[in-house]
View 1 (cartoon, rainbow, N blue to C red):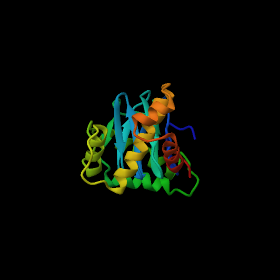
View 2 (view 1 turned 90 degrees about the vertical axis):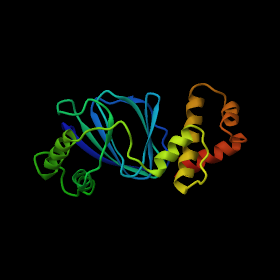
View 3 (view 1 turned 180 degrees about the vertical axis):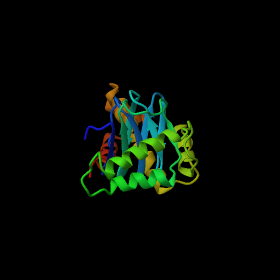
View 4 (view 1 turned 60 degrees about the horizontal axis):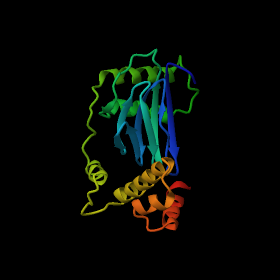
Length: 207
């Protein structure tokens, strides 16, 4: 479809490193299962289940879905009014219901029919919500901030362990793409040896 407003539902079975891109449309991301990372400049945002994040058109960002991540995506062309800044949104029952209805849509997605009506209501709802620079509070968000600062948690949940393992692979990928030798990257990130890094890569990046 190439309408002023588009909707897509996505799923990845394995970690995808993603790449920096600048889309010509505004983009609303809603994580429904699993986790994703969103890199904006020097900031690395954690998107956990229920998270809603808005990216304006022409915003340079890297979206990195982690293993078994499911998310909904609303795209708005510049022909449609939209927020000009990036930020977090509160997932209201109406927003969530509209997104879920579009995900489960089985009829023909006609722009001039009920499908298009829901897209327009969703886009209008987006205009009514204030954006926040801070993510909604959660224990996982607090643990993520500590992880980025190199602070070891007292207890490691299954979620945090998965996040930490994939975050280390993402950093390794960036260092390797930056021209650093594998032996140096493996040592710097504490893998022990190249085989340990390869085993982790195979586990998280293959289905």
